[in-house]
Image 1 (cartoon, rainbow over the protein chains, first blue to last red):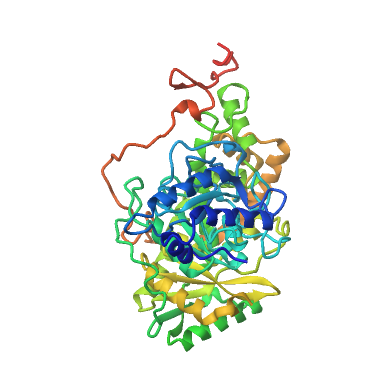
Image 2 (cartoon, rainbow over the protein chains, first blue to last red):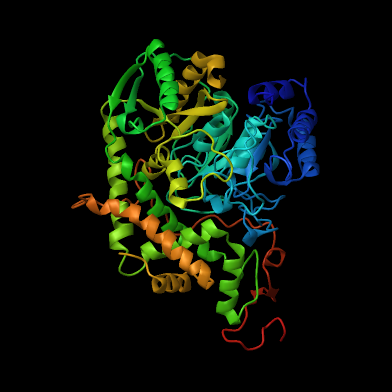
Length: 481
Length: 102
């Protein structure tokens, strides 16, 4: 069972056929049915149904609006690293236990302005560091499709909320694939917009040059409507771009005749799981049949994305997370004097993966190692970005690849940190280059979802959505079979 | 460039992280494994390649060094661990009495 589509809820709410309070009640009932609580799928870090009901009650007052908001009456789940005024924002970390932000993220403000109802804060890998939602102070989230398996990460709670049919839209965040990979694992749609397309104001910083808020949808259309509601320039984020936001739903029924789809050969290595390869091949055949021109291309520095990402992201994290020291907000633990308080608070508040990445980031930035690691990684990042520029300049409109090298793995199956990092092998490149990318379901293997990924050039999300709408239509029920 | 236990102790101090001996020893192994994969980058010829400074279509935007006021809905008292007269209280630098007790 899935949540009603964003478009249907909006239309029915605007016409007065459905009350926002009833839509919300359906979401609450569904959460109960699937066991979304801590002892069950563990999807939410925090829920306040009374607060959600108060939000829903105000929707009726807005029905006189000449243009109903894009998300009128639509419940939306929000990742726990996006600041909300009425609920805690803890980033899945003990160090922010109980912290309620004194300001609200721009994306949440825009959700509310569009008529959306903030339904709850979703579980996540601590400070978005992880690919499985196992690194949370609240414990792991389970995949609603296969509860013995991970939902992917780090935005696993948001992905699970959509996949379980509680909400049709959820917000997540991306630094190296944290929306697309869980979307693939849970059989839903996940979009990472161009760096700068969506404001980061109120998104707790992990790696500022990579972070973007992303959107999950049950369908391409849900995701398009969600992104349309939150995108656009924001004076509160100096890296947000002042570029007009097109209507991403405009291409819902457009064809893809003449669209040039590139298949980067580095994303289809001989080692790729043959069953995932077969699902991709079937999707590519659909694109061909729809009139797209498909050709092989090369992004030669792809193999270097993981080493580059796992230098740059921890380096930025070691700086960004220095603010959590027990002085201004969050946890404070006593130690010997001021330094003892810093060390006790940070060691007691951060989990093992966050500690590991802070130390890794501090090491690669420290005297004697900066040039060999950080400076080198930033140079190779330029080469990775140039690969994309060259391919898109050659006339390729979108790229198509697998989203992840595997389907959802069992909870607890991966204990080696670097093996876990390799989950991001097909997704981290888009964050390093700043280009938009999205995952859509393209089938199942042994009942587990497989995602196909589209990538486009900077700020060309509309073309990416056109391709995704067309492939989703062509796949039909095959996307979940 | 193998990481040693002294390196880990040094970076833990820089990062304000207290580590038990057992955890510090484990971190040595973990960092060496991870950094072993990073050594792949050393083989890449990056002569004359600029470091990435921005990933948007037009690089890193520049703006005036001022912005809109920060919209705080709650005061410091509502979220800081320890506040007095609008100032954040922290322990003394040494092991002397804490200001909370003063």
